[in-house]
Amino acid sequence: MRYDSDVKIILFGASGMVGQGVLRECLLDDDVEQVLLIGRRATGQQHSKIREIVHQDIGDLRPVEAELSGFDACFFCLGVSSVGMTEADYRRVTYDMTIGVAGTLAKLNPSMTFIYVSGMGTNSSENGRSAWARVKGATENALLRMPFRAAYMFRPGFIQPMHGEQPKVTVTKLALRVVGPLIPLIIRFAPHYGTTTENMGRAMLFAATRGAPKKVLESADINALASL
Image 1 (cartoon, rainbow, N blue to C red):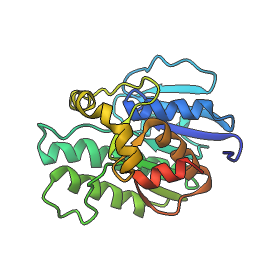
Image 2 (image 1 turned 90 degrees about the vertical axis):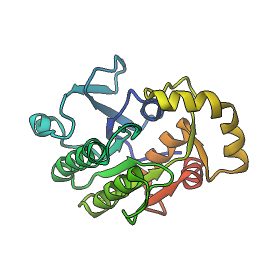
Image 3 (image 1 turned 90 degrees about the horizontal axis):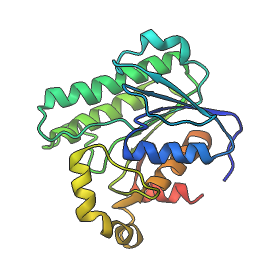
């Protein structure tokens, strides 16, 4: 599929499993001109399209604002597991950090498309029993109210790493060992519950440059968009 040329993307979470897959698709796409990676540690990735900013306080981008203008899209693939965290702490590193980033980028790039990796089971009402689902729902709702050209919430279920991508979170690593061999079957026979790192990247690129039919995309929607 083809996109508008000279697309410039900011990517958060490039060292995580989803971020690795998304970055791969960005680098393979001839119409992506630049990918700016922002994280607390250098990724070690080397490519002519890549520029990297190492910044410790991700939620406060004011010190690096001068380097953040002129971008077409932001792919926010950064996240943590809620296991062992209080709701207040999880909200701080999920809602507060994400909205801090988005607020700065919306001010500098009002024509930007912002894509947020959320998760299957996120609660848009913000009133569910699960703390993580409430926090994710609040984050999605806040992003959808921000003055971007467009914002899309990606809610994948099981994710199959396609090209050697490795998760950073221990819980995810353990889950992949158990469920990993079954994910191809899930995607084939129950596409609402699973997708791949490759499809995540392709669908994000399509949504950022062509738009998507929904603001909130579940696994089946992601798979369908990736196939266009």
